Length: 534
Ligand code: NAD
Image (cartoon, rainbow, N blue to C red; front, side):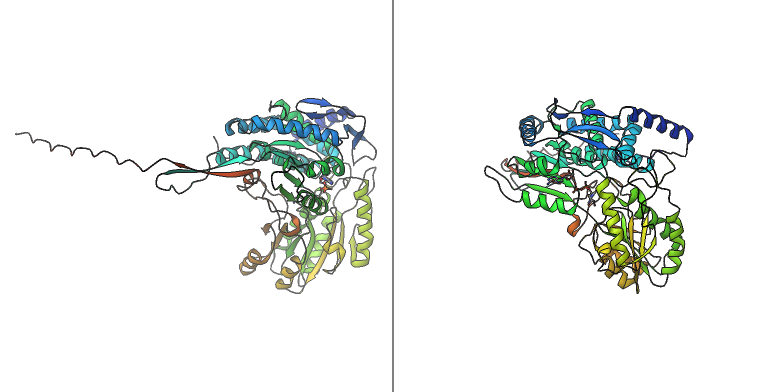
């Protein structure tokens, strides 16, 4: 088997690729309004209560319709997942990994279709959507190889008279709860990691991105993953989610989302229910308030580029997005003079058009939350650019920058999750490090400096799970930048890294007595060859 290599991105500068994407966008739009079922053990379930998913680039445009799972549906899903676990847990790792390679292959073939779904349902621009599909493919290819590696077990010291082994066995039913902002990559990553390790899955996609979830489920079925291994159950987090988090038969929960929901899940899962046999495991990857330092000894042009991409790529709706920019006082004015025109030049609009770099925020409630934070920002800092909705029929907000923000300000401390950037002055590099660490989060961060002593200090003291030096703080690659944060950013699971699959397993150590090693019978000494007489 070839070693893992990250998937290449589509080159949209080529007219042929652009044409194909445009054709696919038209095709996906022609299918808007379809109704999708809940899928439990292969059975299609329809319910009286439904909900829609919308196109945030065009207010009110329905993308697709879904069933609102309730407690009875959740119970049904649990029953099937539990039953399926009894056979799936003993399916050889090679077979399980084979399904992941198949899923990856189908995603490659349906790549533009998946991107188009994300462009419509979650407002990703073409490049961001394409990168999301690439990451989903990478997760499958990487975790399949990882499952084969874990299947070999751990290397132990062999005690005399024993055969000593440690194997990694699955845990049980895994509840997968992904966010909408990496609607394919994170959903596929958590789901495939869970089932390739031998667990069965109840997948509850975000209510803002169930369409992409349904497409993933189609691919799982196309790859002929046995029915019941993955059960697709869209529905309200607070109802179906809470019920399953509390359920005594839930063995583990793989969650990625906000701090508030993450902590709620941790708390709920921590309460032992009657009949519960285990301590539930919770993998919770949560928010961030990520910072970039631009030092007095930085390459300013490269920092301007990195800050712009990190703050406004996908409208600042990445957990890794830069939302705090810490500038050394000595370069503050020079940096801002170059940075602000590049921010003002960002094109905002419906992302089905390739030329729009920024699309809408995810929904109406996020839009109003942005406007509220802009008002707060106006009181806490100096509005430098943006600060208003952008024209158009979607939930568009102009990229917004506030200057001279104090570290105690709300816009410096709270995760806003949109295109709003707080810029602060640091007296010197030590002060800059103090400022970046003045947060309850600890997900990503970047430092721009040419000074190697300062780089070493950042490596030691900048307290984040993913630190980047002289580059943007977004865009982690599977196998290259294992991803996860400290403190209130989560459990630091390091998705896409060599330790991740272990979280979906439990280790079983076996010592088998085989008796003393038999001494090998002594071979008779070789007879001396007779010399031939010449
Ligand atoms: P969210 O917390 O609102 O929702 C996440 C998921 O939880 C959704 O599927 C939602 O339906 C579900 N949910 C809601 N209430 C629930 C409940 N009571 N019980 C069970 N499930 C429930 O987050 P979001 O808005 O979808 O995503 C954005 C957030 O995710 C941001 O805070 C972002 O930083 C974070 N995020 C973190 C990472 C990371 O790796 N650390 C990656 C992506 C996103």
